[in-house]
Length: 237
Image 1: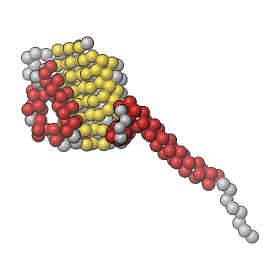
Image 2 (image 1 turned 90 degrees about the horizontal axis):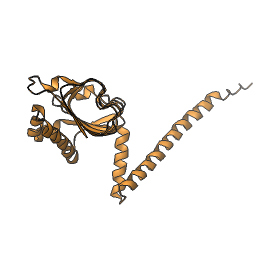
Image 3 (image 1 turned 60 degrees about the horizontal axis):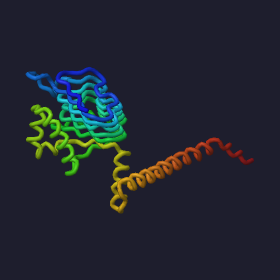
């Protein structure tokens, strides 16, 4: 199913989306710069689990909050983008507001950062920033191409036309724990395990690592607590 809107929308566009496609673009004959104008409101794609989204304009605050599976392309976003995101892919072709990726534990975001200003708007508590490898660059370009086929907006066409230079300006926002699991899966696949087997092996290894870290941390705390509770030795006379 595809839902197409020519115009603008309020908050909660695509809330709980579990499949299909949502397309939003400005009215025909609009003379404003799409990337500089909000076309959908706050909290778009809240809790979405699947599907695709192509937003030809700026999204409001908390774009893709708690997203766990939708793949979205948008020209710009407001504050708190990709907050608490756990899955899916988000491509942002322009500026973001502050506190991007706060609480983001899964999925991946790709931000076009021509002005080298994105890092100061990104919450680095749970993520790291990388460049794109060739495989990722192909995925991102294909997402942008699909958007451009739907609506030949100027920003989309320019990004594709200048791709060899602009691809170096993309920042990959990659959650730390999610990255560790994905890299573990790749390691098991290199050992000959198929997809499902690699996923289970990575999950089991991550579970063991988490339990060991918890035990070591709490064992240290328990020992320290016991030391504090032990009575002080009496003075010798």
